[in-house]
Image 1 (tube, rainbow, N blue to C red):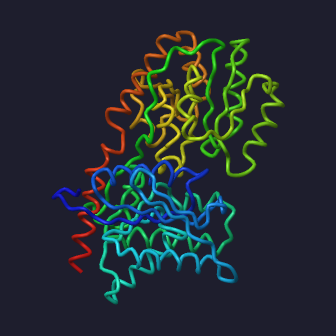
Image 2 (cartoon, one colour):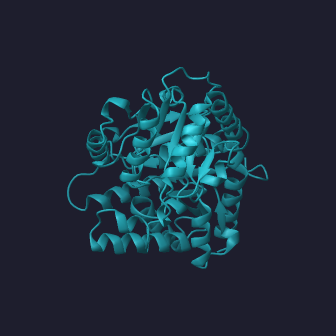
Image 3 (cartoon, helix red, strand yellow):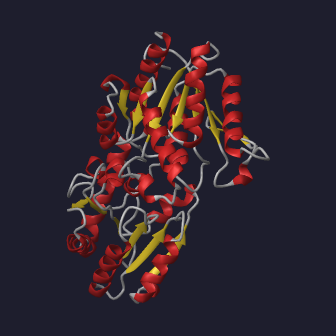
Length: 398
């Protein structure tokens, strides 16, 4: 129910499927589940990328209908798929359309409904969620896009953010960027990521000491990670590293080559991608985790879901103090912060925690309890419902 007891019909539009990327699985889906538990009717529409085997599948998860769109055949593929998504939204006649990322398919659907509303064929509210920055200094500069794609995505991002009835943002940096675009603060809602699971209290892990690397290698330079690993390995002959994750490109292959050159291959346990149900148990095998983030706009704008996963699993985390990280880690209490890019400080902090497993365990348990007490999606619902109420009021006032 909304703040005044309203129950709304909500359609969430995704840019890709539920795996392996995290936006829809770890942000939109748990958000939708929390809304469904409050009595709202929620449907998630997804283009089945990068897992086309899901095309045409539909299922209900904890009261949320998830529908992966069938794939069209022939020319103008992406436009036709966006058209199918728009027609499905028209059929559902929701009160709110919430697009996750102001680009690609959600951006196209948003553009369609912004103009349909002018014809009277759609009267609902349009909400945009952004959890990354694409524009100058953002992913547009890093991804291998063509020049026209860069221009188009940058235009989509600005147009989508400035033409929404309400905007939900995952970080303070994105909030500031939205204000800089001239979006009124009353339409910008700070909605950082929350835990989609809370692990059980974990026992003190047995030897050998194990450092978790839960990453896609996108947030930092690989050379710095290797230097940190080498320094820790020199201090402990039995130290091990547990790698968990699934990169989108050749990052893992480059990591394997780097650890082989460093003579560390025998120190690593390769877990790779982990089914969500197993993640608390797998992460819980570690004595601590490292979370590296270089200090640049992409990292300052994001809200690191993998960091939340580590804390929710009860691991003590040594992390670069970049962007949203200090929102979740209270230094010395729920984790350990080091100056951005300072590999030596990260080594010293990690070594200090490895030398005192009981103290490290207490920090990890403090983190798990903090996430459970303040960073579940149920704690974000009042803000999300306020965003919908503002959007509906604005749409109704047109």
